[in-house]
Image (cartoon, rainbow, N blue to C red):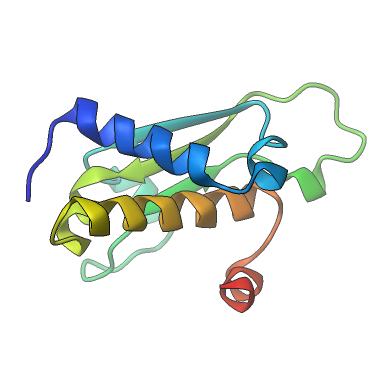
Length: 121
């Protein structure tokens, strides 16, 4: 499946808007971007093997670790288009994959680790 960047961005916007307002409304100072794939630097930093796929990435200082800090640079959530497309077989499944990945990365923003996120799922 292949879609335009414009449609992919629209699906990201829809996914964010569909999140519960209690989570969505508290997201501040976060840029949500997309890229085709993770960079080599991102893959190295995360120590990903060649056979591992990365759908999204949160980069920043989680809210739970900001005590006593003044202003901070914007955090960044990046969704990776090609890996997400490879997980989907149609627009509805892509929409759900984007929503799930975005929620997962926002959970990291709130300070949850993978174990806590999987527990909530």
